[in-house]
Length: 379
Figure (cartoon, rainbow, N blue to C red):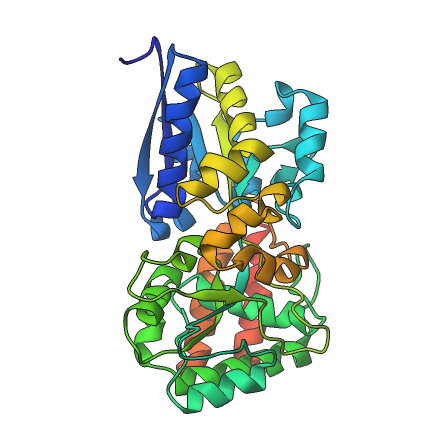
C-alpha cells in the first residue's frame, strides 16, 4: 500500500548502488508506514557526470559523489544535513566513518551528505590465478608483460589512477588555487602509466571499473587489476563466474598503500523537498551502524560505516575484502571539490588519455593539467 508521503530517490544503476537502498526503503516503511520511497537509477557514467542541481528539482533524496559538493553548494540545491540532524548523531557517524568518507561531504561549514558507501582505488585479483597480491608497481608491470593485467582507463578513471599514483609518491595533486603540480613526480607517474598502458589490451581505454571487473571475473585471460574502485559484490561467490579478491593497492612510492583517490557515495537531501524532516531521518538511518552492518551489506551494499567494515559477519561473505583493503581506505586522498572541479575532471582525463596514446608528451600534459586546473577556479 502506497504511503501518504511519497518520496523519490535517485541512485546509480549498479546493484551496489540500487539494491541496498530499495531494501532499506522497504524496512523503513515498517517503521514509518505512511512513507513510501521509490528509487530511480542512472548509469555509472551518468552518476559521475550529471549535475546534481538537475536532479534536485525532481528528487527528494539523491546519492551523490563528493567532488560534486562545491557545485551543489554554489547552486544551493541541497539541504545541509546538519540543519535538521541531531548534533550527537552526526558526531557518532563522524567517529564511525571509514577514512575521509564523512568529511568528504563537509564543505563551507556544513555537512551536505552522509556517507553510505566507502570506496577508493585498490587492487583486484583472481585468487585462482594469482595466489598473492602484488605490493609494488614493478610487479604490476611484470604481470602486464605476460598479458595478465586489465586496467580501467575510461574517463574519469584514468585521472583517478594519476591522482592515486601521484599521492602515493608523496606529491598529491593540488586541491587549492595557485598550487603547483610536482613536475618531477607527475612526469614519473605519467611515464609509469604509459609503460603499463602500452602493455594492456587497448580495450582498457573504453573500460570503467565495472567493465574491468567483469573482464577479470568472466574469463581466464586476466589475473590482476592494479587500480580499481572497490566493488564488494564481486567478492561474493556466485555474483560472477569467478570470485574476485580485493587487497591494498600496489605502491609506486615508498610509503605503502597511501594516497588512493577516494570514491564512494553519500546520501543527500534536496533543498526543494517538501519533506525535509523525514528525508533527514531516512538518511541518518541508512548511514547508521546497525543498518550498514545488516540489511545494507546483505543486499549488495558496500557500507561506509567502520563498524560494518570491522564486522566478521560482513567480511566473511565477500572474502574479507574490507579487512584486506582497510589500510588503503584509511589512507585515501581527498579530491578537489570546488565548484569548477567537475569540468576539470573531464578535461584532465582527456589530457591524460592523449598522453597515454602518444598524442602529446608528458611535459605538455602536465602543463595542460596545471593550466586547466587553475582555470577551473574561474569557471
